[in-house]
Length: 572
Image (cartoon, rainbow, N blue to C red):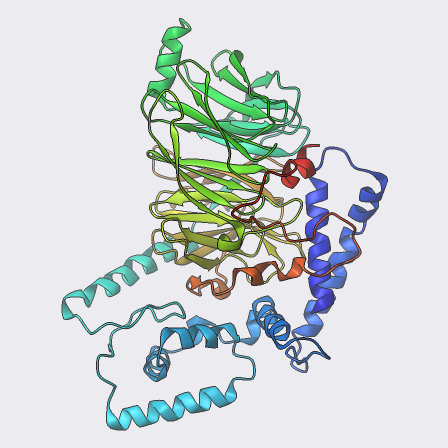
C-alpha cells in the first residue's frame, strides 16, 4: 500500500504541474514520466486486488497506522466488499436489529469488512435469537434507508410509511430517465491555454483562461463572438451580475438597458467589467492583490466580493461606486472559491478553511463573519497545489478538494459527511455544481486519465448515473442551464472547453457520452469520524521534492503566511 500511495501522490503532483504556465526542465522530466507511473500503478492495483493478497498485514508500525492502511485499501478496492445493492432488505433489517448503536455500525463500516467473518457469524446468531424472542422494544421495523450514518432508530409511524415508498418511486423513475439520456458534445476552440472559469447566460457562454483572455461564445452555432483582451495575467474567475443590476450600470454609462455585463478577475490584480454586446471594458478596478475568486452579491445596492491569492484576503466592493468597502485577511492561503446564497457569502481557501459571512447591505464593512471552520474541521487540508471549490445549499456546503469524495459541511454545527464520488482513492474531485434538482461532481482518475461527471439527487444526495467520454479531459470548471424545452446544456472547462447538449428523447441520433452506473457509488454519505484520514497519502515522503507535503491545515490563532500555494502553482 505504501508504494500505491506514493504513486498516487506523484500523479497528483504531475497533474498540478501540468496546469502551470511555465515549467522548469526538472518539472518537464517529471511530467514525461506520467504514462510510466500510471502503468506501474495499474499493475500494483491489479496485484493487490487478487484473492491471495492480505491487505491488513504490515511488518511493523503502530496499530493505528495499520488500521488506516486497511481502511484505505478497502476504499481503493471496493469490489472485494459486498456492495449495498447486493444486500437483501431482510439482511439489512437483521443487521440493524443486531446492532446496539449507530456508533458501533460506523466502526464496523470503518473496518471495511476485512476479516469480519466472526462478527458476521455473531450477527446471524443474534438475528436467529431475535426471530425466536421477537425484536427488542422501541426498534422500528420500517427503516427504508439503513446506512452506517443512520441516526438513532425511531418507533414506527404508520402515517409516514408511504413517504419513503413514494421517494423511492420518484428516484427510480429519475434514475431510469437518466440511464437513457443522450448527450452531444461540441468543442469550442480558441483558447491557447487552460480554461479556468466559465459562466453561462442563456445560450451564451463566457470563458476565462490562463492565456489572459475572456471569450464570448454563441452555443447554438459553437462560434466565438467576442475576444475580450485586456488582462496582463491569467484570468482566474468570472461572475455575471443579475439583469436588474446590469440595468443600473447601463443607465450610468448611457448604454441600452438590455446590456449585460460580465466581471473577470485576474492574476494582474484587476477586476474588469465588460459589456458583452460590444466587448468593451467599461470599468477596471485595481485590487492591489492577485484575484483568485470572485462573486457578485445581489443584495441591497449590490456588491462584488473578491478573494486574493496574497494573504488570503476577502474584499468587498460597491457595485454602485466601485470603491473598496472592506478588506479582511480571512484565510491563511489563497482564496480559491467564493459563492453567495441570499444574504450569505461563503469563501473557501487552499488550506481547506471555510468562512461564512452575512451581508449587512451597509456602505462600509458590509460583511459580518458568522462562522469559520478550519481545514482541521473540514478535513480538506492540502499541500501545495490544493484547491477547494464549494457550492452552498441551505445549511450545507458541498466541498470539492482534489480527493476521491465530496465533503458535506454543516456550516452551523461544523459536522462533516462524505459523499463517495469515485470508486477508488485514485480519483480526484475538482469541482461540484448544482442545477435543477441535481448535484454534479467531476471525477478524474489519476491511474487511467478518465474524466467522469457523477450525478446525485438533491437534497437526498442519492447517486443516479455517471457520464463519461474518452475525449473529455480533466474538468476544472463547470456551468449549466436549461433550454426552452427543459433539456440540459452544460459547459466544462479544463484543457478543452466542451459543451454538453442533451438530445431529445425522441431522437434516434447516437449520443457521444457513455451513461453508466457504478454500484460502488451507491453508498450513502457517511459521517466523518477522522478527517485526517483523507490526507494520509500526503504524510509519506515520495522523493519528489517540495511540491506537496507537510501539514497545511489552519490553526485558529495562526498568523498570515506567504501567498497561497495553489496560486503559486497554477498562475506563476
